[in-house]
Amino acid sequence: MRIMHVIGLIIHPQKEWQKIRLESTSIPRIYLTYIFLLAAIPILCNYIGTTQIGWYFNPDKVIRLSSDNAATIAIMGYLALLGGVFVVGLLIHQLSQTYSASTSLAQCVVFSAYTATPLFVLGIAGLYPAIWVYLIAGIIAAAYTTYLLYAGLPIVMNIPKEQGFFFASSILCVGLVAFVSLLVIAVLLLATGIGPGVNLLL
Image (cartoon, rainbow, N blue to C red; front, top):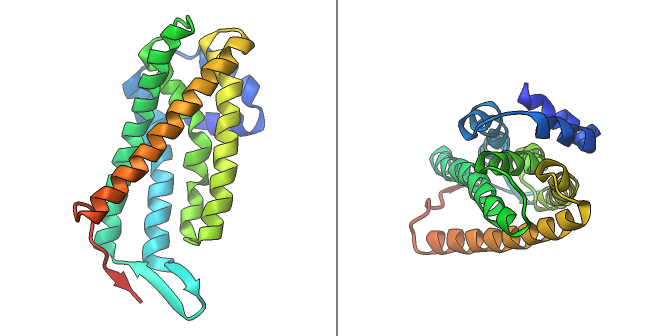
C-alpha cells in the first residue's frame, strides 16, 4: 500500500525513495491511493479544531467558526491542496528539462506528493488551533519537507547529487514564490468578499 510510504519516509527516507523510484504509477492512481487521503488530514483536523475547540486568544475568550463557514473554508482548502500537488509536479517536470532529467509528468507529480508528506501529516496540529502550535508544526513540516526534497530528488530523477542540489534549490525557490502568491490571492479574495464570510461564536 502506498500509504505505508508515510512511515518509510519518516524512518528511513533514503531507502524509501529507492522503493518509490522503482514503482510504476499514474497520476490518477497516486491521487486515489495517496493524495486524496493525506490531504484530508489537515482539512479535517482544522475543521474540527476551529468549530469544536476554537482559537484561544486568552483564557476568557474562545473564538469558533460556524460549521457553514468552516465547511466552505475546508472545501476551498482541500481543492487548493489537490491542485497544489499537481501544479508543483508540473513545475518540477518543466524544470527537469533544464537539468536533463528524463522523467514523465506522472513521476514528477508522484515526487511532489511524497515530498509534501510532512506537510500533510503535521496538519494534525489543526486539532488545537493555537498560533504557537501552528508555528512549531509548520517549522518542523517545512524543514522535513525540504530535507525530503533534497534527499529524494537525485534518487527519483536519477541524476548526480550535485546536479540534484541545484535542481532542488530551483524547485524550492519556485515553490516559495507560488506559496506567497497563493497567500496574497487568498487575502485579496477574503478582503473583497469573495471568500467565506466570518461568523464567529464566542
